[in-house]
Structures are given as structure tokens and as C-alpha cells.
Image (cartoon, rainbow, N blue to C red; front, top):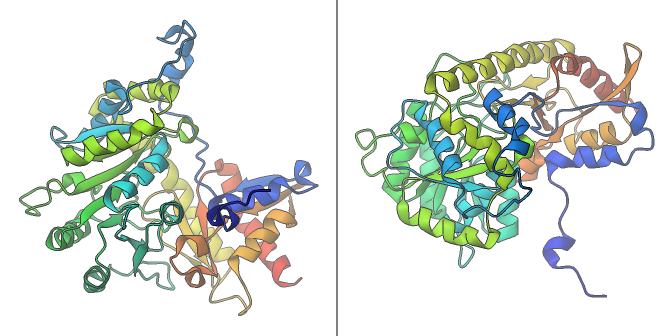
Amino acid sequence: MPELSLHFQNRIPSVIRQAQIVFSQRIDKDSIQVVNLAIGNVSLPMHPAMQKRMNELGNSRFSDGIVKYTPSAGTQEVRAAFLNIIAAEGIDTSNLFSMVTDGGSAAMELMMLGVCGPSAPRPLMLLDPAYTNYIEFGKRLSIPMVTSDREIHDDGTFARLDLNSIESCIEKNLPSALLVIPFDNPTGQFLSQGTLLELARLCVKHGLWLVSDEAYRPLHYGQEEPSSIWALSEQDVPGVSGIRISIESSSKVWNACGLRIGSLITDNEEFHTKAISEYTANLCANALGQEIFGALAHETHEDIQKWYEIQQNYYRSIMIPLRENLIKEIPGLIVTEPEAAIYFIIDFKNICDPSFIASAFVHYCASEGKVVLDGNTYTLLLAPMNGFYSEPEKGKTQMRVAMVEPPNLMEKTPLLLAELYSTYQNR
């Protein structure tokens, strides 16, 4: 038999999918209610305009049963929809170029090809911990990653970014781009507009692309205004024009994970043109998904802002009580402050024994763990944080929690986690 490539031989599932795969292999899975907080698979309805489009697909331009390729850059309507969303933040989009991709994931990979490699690639710089898919795509494309650490305090708050450390990393490793996630996945940290301004100045100074994953814009829960690289001006950062790229998605704020529609936005026309050329090998993004998401091109900015407020209030009402109840139920557990996005990190380092490894605990919960509560049997799926760090040892006692199950299940999480952890430790 022919051999698999070395890449395939060494490939294991992403940490955000591992627990789900293990649980699917359980003999007793049909008798267990699974609370899956391992992956950001939002369980809320899409924006009403998108729902209307979906329900009318049979009477749309697809009524004859023909589904053709769209242009590789996406339909004009969907490209306009992504720009309309950015414009709703009061941002001038007249100099921005938009193309449509199969989800934000395809936009990530395309961006990495455009700014790093794969031929003689320069590194991509991340803030550690970072969204695992960038790390995994780096392995796929043989693009090296360099990271600058950020500190999580024992009270769950975040230390300010160490700009001197970030600049030292840039000078030492010569990355081609700095990637930031202002509404951060996996930590839930919020990077303010002032922080983005300081990072942009470093990028201009050292000749880096400034890449911002804005899939969760503007999901934040403090008093500050939303942040975006597109709100930076030449007056703020001379030279910032033409070095910016953002990753956009229909999945999170618009509650359409399975639609698989994303976008690559830039203010660099040459990058945009070459990105489309590269994407012609993919032909185009999902045509039906584009038809549905395109409805947002026609929504007013006022309507979009009202939608944002609904989403913010929903997640705020879940995340803050959940954090408080986790700390109450498991004294000593570190739970990061939920500043943004739909995640926070939990860390057992101050209460676990030295042999505790989060990935092993997650495997236990998925493969055999169970808790009887209110007459029903449950287990809990989480994502071990080792896959979100450049050095897995850093996250060995940490897990990411996603706010994606209905509220009645989210409320059970503290009791489920406490019981599963206690049983695991006493085995």
C-alpha cells in the first residue's frame, strides 16, 4: 500500500473538535445529554433578514433548480453586505476591498498564503494564546509561528500587553505580519482602540502587515467603544493605509456557523487582486450561503446596531453569572474576566495536583464522565487549551468554555464541572 504523507500521519483532530469525536464513540451516548461548550457552534437564530432569505430560497434566483458558480470574489451583494456591516460602525469603507470566502477559516488560510508563504515563508506573529486554527493552518502550509506571551492574573483579569516584549519579538524573528483578535478567541479579552493604535504603529515602524480577526466585532461587555483596525486613520497612524487586512465571518455575530460564509477585507488593492487570483483555484464560496447572507447588504445601520445590542445583552446575561457561579462552585478556580467574544478560560492550576492535564480530563468527560442531575444524565465537553498555545505545556491546566448552549444548559455547567472534576480527581 502507498504511504500517507508525514503531515497526515501526524495529524490529530483540532482541540475544539476532539471531545465531540470522542463522545460520538461512546456506547452509552444516546442516554446522555451532552453540554458541548468545546466549540463555538452558536445555537441562536440568524438575523431575521437572513432567515427570510433562507425561507424564500425556493422562490429566488435558484427556483429553476440551477446553482451555478458565483464569481471567485463572491457576488457583488455579499461583498457589499460585509462592507455595510463595517460601515455601520461609522467607518468609511470607500477604500476597502471585499472578497467572499468559505467561512472565516478559508479567509485565514488565504491571508496566510498572501502575507507569509508558502515559498520561503516568513513567520506570522500571534499573541499567545491564539486561536488554534491559525496554528493548525501554519502546520498545513509550513508557515512558522512566533508568539508574544500575554499574562492572565489569578483573579482572571488580563495584564496589559507588553509592547516592549512584542517589539523585541518582532526585531528578533522578523515576522511578515502581526495578527490580533480584538474581541479575542480564546481568552475573551478585549483589545481597545488605543491598544490597536499602539500595535499599528509597531507594524508601520517594522514594515509588517496588520491583520485583525474581527469575527466577533462588536461583542464586548464593558463601557468602551468597539475597536477595529478600520477605525484607525492616517492621522492616528501615518502609514497605516495599505497594510491592513481583516478576517470577517457570518458565523458568530450573525449566528450562521453552518452557512460557511466569510470575507477577506483589505485596503491594499494589490493584495485583494492577488487573493482573488489565488482563490480561483477554489472556484467560489457557497452560492446558497451567499444568497442568504447577502440580505445584510440592505439593512440600515440603525437596524444593525440594534441587532448588536441584542447579541451583547444575551451573552452578557449568560457569561457574567456563569463566571460567578463557577468561582462559587469550585473555589480557587481561575476564570478569566469575560470582556468580549463568547468565551472565557478556566484554569485549575491553583487547585489541581501536579499530574493534572486538562486534555486528559476533557477526554475523561467525553469518554466516560457522567453526572445525574434533575433525573437526567449529563456530561460536559470543553476544549483543552494546549492547542491554543505555541508551547502546549503552557496551557496544560486550562480549558476554553464557549457560551453556545441554550441558557438552561449553560446554567447547569458549574454543577456539572464541579462533579466531573471531583469524580475525576478521586478515581
